[in-house]
Image (cartoon, rainbow, N blue to C red):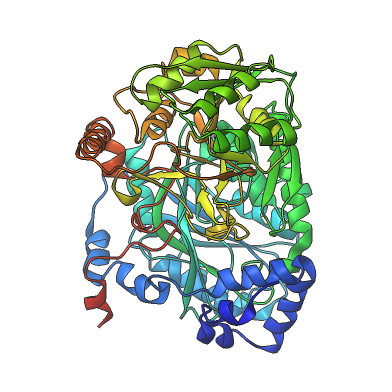
Amino acid sequence: MINLDSQMGKIEWNRLLKNLSPYTIRKGLLYLKHYGPKEFWIRIHERFEPEEIPYEIWYPAYQPDTRTLDNQRRKKFKNAPLISIAVPAYRTRPKFLAQMIESMRSQTYKNWELCIANGSPDDAGMAQVLDSYHTKDRRIKVKNLSGNLGIAGNTNAAFDMTSGEFVALLDHDDVLAPNALYEIVQVILQHPLCDMIYTDEDKVDMQLKEHFQPHLKPDYNLDLLRSNNYICHFLIVRRSLFENVGKFHVDMEGAQDYDFILRCVEDARQVIHIPEILYHWRTHRESTADNPTSKMYAYEAGKRAIREHLKRSNVEGEVLDTLDFGFYRVHYPVRGKPLVTIIIPNKDEKKTLKACIDSIFEKSLYQNFEILIIENNSTTEEIFAYYAELEKNPRIRVIRWEREFNYSAINNFGVSHANGQFLLFLNNDITVISPDWIDEMLGVCQRQEVGAVGVKLLYPDNRIQHAGIVVGMGGIAGAMFVDMPGERSGYFHKASIMQDMSAVTAACMMMKRDIFVKVVEGFTEKLAVAFNDVDLCLRLCKAGYLVVYDPYVQLYHHESKTRGAEDTEEKVRRFQREIEYMRSNWIDILKNGDPYYNKNLSLSRWNYSLRPIPGMEKKKG
């Protein structure tokens, strides 16, 4: 039963009441019907929970000031590529159309052309705006179509008008930040192999006064893109790539941009993300930015776009809906029945280990596994009696590590005794929730490009303990969404969708044995306790492999029962040495930021809160 009184106290009532209208009430009823009462309440709570730093305070401090924009306007580029902006227009309100065009004319970078394909040539209001701007600015090109060809057809007509070295997409009622093209050209000149660029974005109300819901994106993230069209706006592609992949497919109407993006990333030499909010997506009643239920056909088209992408990539996978509109799950089936070796270090703690082992045998659907328990200096008679009982099972072996505790060395020792093609590192304080946990991890791990798979771990009270790791969080690295209720999905549903990350915890992590042994050569034994899994994952990323967070596997984690606290001088010194190891070996990512995170997000909060801007309070005043 949901305690409405206690939870409503946490909701920002002013924001909720401000958004109430007959339209939003009707919209809310549609969502209620779709989600059901419990899930609907969870999403209302997430949407209107108070923010650490409200975006309406943060954004004015974030925007470039007049001096910065003036300096950009004065800059002379030795190579100033022509940027073509393709705009499909249909039944656009004249005011919105004018604001879109003005956002182009306000760009600090001047070598652009705006190519507008007008799918409503009989609209007098639109015609007046388009004629006026075309007359005063010859960079604005207009083509009146015979009639509406749909979003894909209208966009293709706009594409045909372009001549620039790079082509970008802009919706007819959205606006660009004045520095958008300047930032893009900077990247083009710095990265000569870049074929595809995308930026961060936010939403803006109909009057262009209130900015909200900033989408602060990671760098290119294959599994996130297969879960959601997170790239979306603002998208720029090199003409040679555009000509190679072709224009929008009309049979993908509603997800034509998603399909186009998937085709582009398959062929692009380099995909660059600019972590700046350069695109403002206007919301109104007909817009999917405000009312996702208005275009249900688009979500079906999105599934088809992912299916076609998987076929072109020669990847077997089933594309499924999630509860959230526009977010998908790709389920990768297991090929064959490879042996999985589950490696569990243990010292004493019979009750904890027994709960772990029992849950594996009682709940696991996948049965081709063996268990290696790495015994490390236990002292109680009951644990050795339990070992003797376990070893009666031919699928369980107990091997002895008689030196001091060193998590990395213990697991490396375990791998040397493993028979499986796949290794599943597991803490002894884990218990299984998802019966298909091995199958799900294995299906992902079998993909050629995947180096490791991690999962969603919950505390026994069903709050999140781990939903992937961000490098730099809390200083060196930290788990995301810690202590958030497990039923919530988090910022852009990132706690609940598959994505690539820089690291996952080895409390439950699967790898191919060959990659572990031959590519990364095991855990770094200088990291006896802390950050060994982070270091391993970063070495996988450096070698070109993906580290995948898979939330469709859930387990309980009774964290750190065996090892105990860092409560002695020796342990504190060891921890400091391991921090220094990470700082000296991974200074670049610690300095430049985790590519699967965003520089504008906090490194002290786990929930994708905004990072404070120096002088923000002063600017606010």
